[in-house]
Amino acid sequence: MIPSIYKINSVEFKKFYNKGINKNSKHIRVSFVYKKMNESIFSKYTVVVGKKISKSAIIRHKNKRKIYNILKEIYPQFSYLKFVFIFIKTDVLNVDEKEIKNQIVELLSKRG
Picture 1 (cartoon, rainbow, N blue to C red):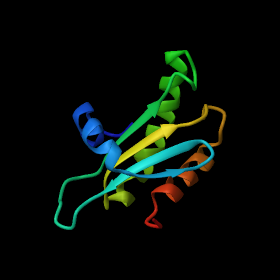
Picture 2 (tube, helix red, strand yellow):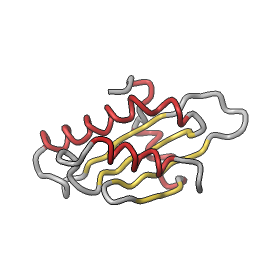
Picture 3 (cartoon, one colour):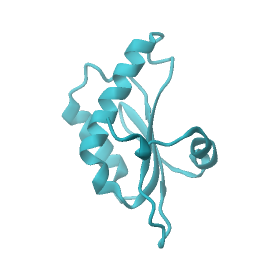
């Protein structure tokens, strides 16, 4: 898990979610907001798993933990982003961690 200071709170979610740039892959959808030139705050992240993925809260939390563990490894390389919203489109528990990591890195790269 990433430290809680790097997680988006509900006020920031409501304020910045609609302002983000959206990108999609097979298993996840990402929305992110770039930092302004002189902003020195750190990047913040959130992972959202809807009830369409699983009715069981246990399964949804396992999906979230899997994504947060991947973010723990890669979040320092995306310091140019202010807010990152990750939405899980399908159950990722049985998907290889490297595949999900590659999808996240590809979506968050500076190509757009």
